[in-house]
Image (tube, rainbow over all chains, first blue to last red; front, top):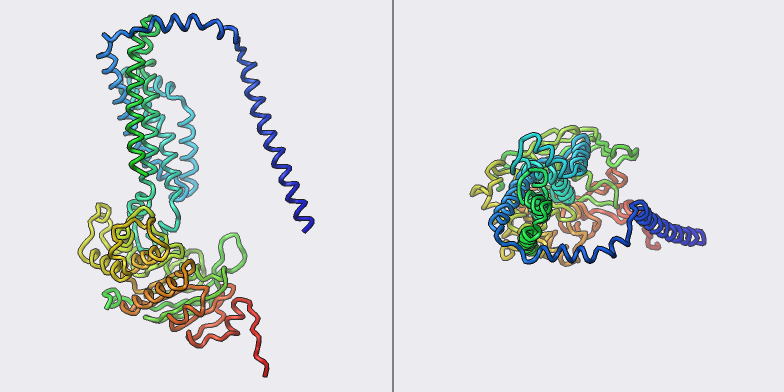
Length: 263
Length: 261
């Protein structure tokens, strides 16, 4: 009994020490980032006037560009929507194949590595490659969004499928269900709410990320962000900012309503 | 009479069976001979880890990697290949933890029992034939859940969920009805109701009934034969009303005190 108590106390102390080490390491990392970045906080203090002047030039917004900004925002919306749609199709296939509980390790392990690699490639880089491959316009943007978001969405789908209790599918197996029937009647009812939630979340992310696609010629409102800011037309940039804010808030509201309905 | 019964015999024959999980030396099953005739009601009893569930999974055709000879419903099972879908449908299995689709309704869960019998492609679009519909409705009525048919199963009590699991099994119109620890998590009253239901359904459909349980005294009232398993081997195989205290004692490690002469 004495031995058990001693072991227990020693483990507890080890655990406390580990916690301190983790906190100290994170603190040291943040400190290194600050020092190595050579940040001059004095410049931040002096920037107040310049920010004021910048805001002064933004207001009142120039509403004459509203039709152009709304149309290009809708193009961004279409890019995000089509990119997400293609990504859903790819992710459903890859997600099922990457699920540990569905396929053997020689299939799901390489697929998971592939999805991790896709996630690691920045969207802007994918967009530049797509522009090089298929030319300017919304198409490279759609392809870039589809490729980039499949890395995350397929991983989410695979995890949702892996979370299905094995007994539920074993019961269908026992009843003589085919593989497809097991997916349709066993897996789908259990994972559908998760898949819809994950997909909506990814669509919201795609929409925000699609805003910058125009910077590299891949369509949408990004082109105007670049044009107005670089030519110092801050009043037009203000209209653009307001439209983007309204746009994103509307999508978030829609998302909120759908998620609440899924509970 | 169950139409499936006319086409199959539900005899189970097992000879020289051994099974151990890969990487583990200990034998989970080691049965020289076991035979169960059509329409018999049999309980497998024994301590945890004695191979009851493994044996039932073997009879259900879901266990691979064993050695020996296993014949169920006229089919010699393969230790390397899963049995075909049409054969699977003849054996109903009530899982210990119910194994229901939590977000689906009672009706949908019971309908899942028909998946091995219905058209595999049409069913994906929700198209089931009249015979499927009849079997589903009868199964729900038999377990007394008609009023809750459209209720999601995650809103039901433990006893009700167990009845859904039984109904799913019945909708298969099985020749062999297997129930793995069907009452382990139920209170005594609910447990008796479920065992009563399983026996009544098996009798009405002429199906063989196999139950595993930790409650020998309780299940003895509902079966004709009790097989005691110890370390994967058949310790005794006797009529339900003939099991002795010594036999139970040897199974569970109890010390049976003889009354003084």
